[in-house]
Length: 423
Image (cartoon, helix red, strand yellow):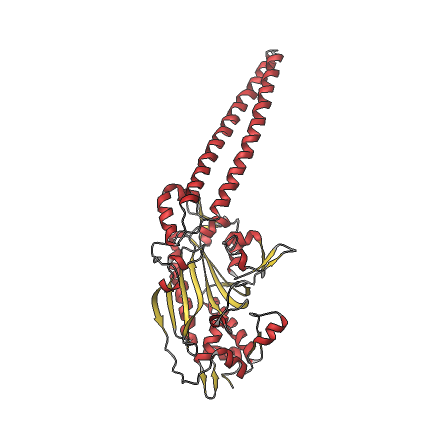
C-alpha cells in the first residue's frame, strides 16, 4: 500500500497519478488525511495525559512524605480519572489507525511516470518485437485440434473429473510440460536465481501482503474450512518469505525462482478467446521474484525483461513486449511489461508473461525492509515476472511448429523430452 508519507507529501500529485489508472482518489485521499489529522490529535492528547500522569505520580510520593495523606488521595483520584480517559483515547486511536489501514488498502499503487495513459488493452504500447513469424499453410490447425490429433491434452476428461479449465496432459504432452518447467527453472538457476519450492496454499495475511486481497478475492480459490487460499501465482508465497523481515543491505538483492501450479477462478471468462489452453483455471508457471534496494530496482526490471526475452528467443517463438497503460495495469503494480507470443493458427497474440516493479507498494504491506549502510531501516522494492507461464507457450509451440510430419520440438527442450518430434 502507499505510505502515508507519500500521500501527505503531495496529495494532489497522488490523486492525479491514480487517475492514470482510472481510479478517482479524491474522496479516499481526503478521508485518509482527515483520519490522520484526527489520529495525531488523539496521539497528542494521549502524550499530554502521559506527561500529566508522570507529574502526578511524583507529587503523590512527595505529599505522602509530608504527611498530607488526604491531598495525596485526591491526587490518586485524579490519576485514576486521567487513566480512564487515556484508555478511551487509546481505544479511539486504535480505531482510527485501523480505519486508516482499511482505507489505505483500497488505494492502488501509483503508476510510474513512464506508464502511458489509456483505459484498456488497446491502449498498451508495443516497445519491442522479436523472433521470426512462422509460415503455415491454410490447413494449419489450432492447438486444441493438434492436442486431440496427437493425443497430447484431453480437455473433455478434465471436464469429467473436475470441470472446464482443468485439462489432462497425456503422454508426450505431459513430457512437454515437464520439459518446459525444467528448462525454465534451469535457465533461472543459470541466471543467478535461487530455486525454492513454496507451499501451494497461503493464509490471508500472505494474500494481503502481496495485494491479491482484498483486490482479487473473487478470483482466488478459497479453502473455507481452513481459511487458506490456493495460490494464483508463486509470487505470493515467495515474496511473503520476506514479510516482517529486515534484510541486511549487503544481502540484497534477493533473487528467487519457483515452479508452482496456479489456480485462478477467472470468473466471467468465456468465448473463443478462452478456448483450449488460452485460459485455464489451473496451470503451471515458473516465477522469478526479486527484492531490491530502491535505487537498483529499475535496472533489475530491465534484467528480468532480458531474461524472459532470452527464453522466448531460445524457444524460437515470435514475440512482442507491451508497456501496459494505466487502465490495464494491476492494482499493485507501478509499471508492467507484458510479453506476448504469436499464435500462428489462431492469428493472434497470446500473453505469456507479465514483468512488474511494485516499488515500495508490496513492501509496505509486507513490512519488507532493509538496513542501509547508515543503519537506517528502509522499505525494499519488490519485483516479479512469469518466466514463463506454460499454457499459451504450449499453444504457440504446437501451432507454430506443426509440419506435415508432426510437431517439431525446439532444440533446447529435446534433452528434457527425449524426443524431437511429436508424430
